[in-house]
Length: 127
Image 1 (spheres, rainbow, N blue to C red):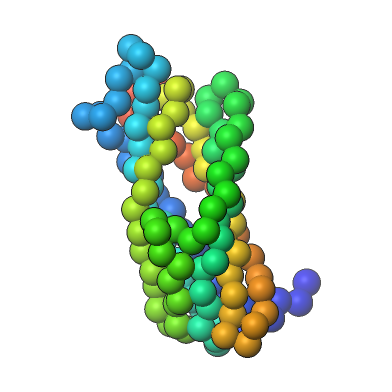
Image 2 (cartoon, one colour):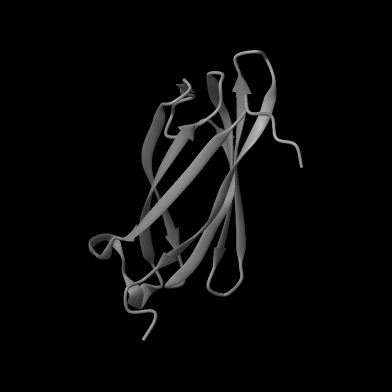
């Protein structure tokens, strides 16, 4: 498959369990996740919208759509990275997140940056 080198945005994500804000007895598991968005293309690109698919340990799926991330619609120039941290609350001790960012390149082209699947995992969930 041909991929236009002008529109290359790579996304990495890492999650952490926040025990201080969680209450396992009440089915509340709080996670933060840090996302790094790398512009490996040849044009500046602005992050316009986000889409998340959050799946908990029971297979329940929640979809989240919205403008930008953490109140911003950053423009990322070639070679730069934009990093932010946000959070998710699950009712189960394990889950996953994946999705995409809708990007707008400097030449007016819209494209999607895929967010690879990553785990939300309570440290005691796996024995």
